[in-house]
Amino acid sequence: DSLNDSAYFSEMLMSLGEKHTAYNVKSEMLPFLWPAIRDGLRMRLGEKFNVDAELAWKHLYDFILCKMTEGMDN
Image 1 (cartoon, rainbow, N blue to C red):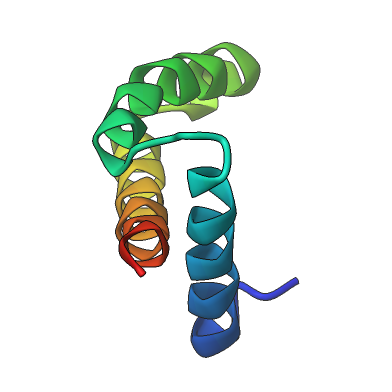
Image 2 (image 1 turned 135 degrees about the vertical axis):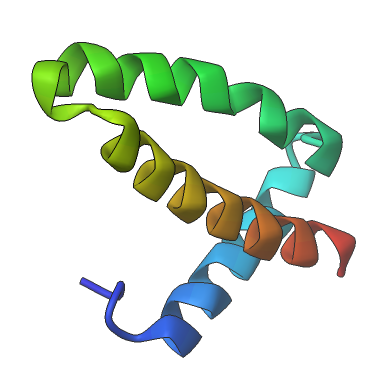
């Protein structure tokens, strides 16, 4: 619901990053999730998961990673 509101979405992701520190999750761990997420998307989307779709999802994941890392660093 908040993808159209980048300020709210950013705040939500930073808050999520802060919460993850309570579980001893380090920002260095987050990039390792991409292969599993990518493979899950590929399995679920099938032929719709083409190069363009992968790049779009990776771009979104990189944004999520950036904002969560900001939250973890606070």
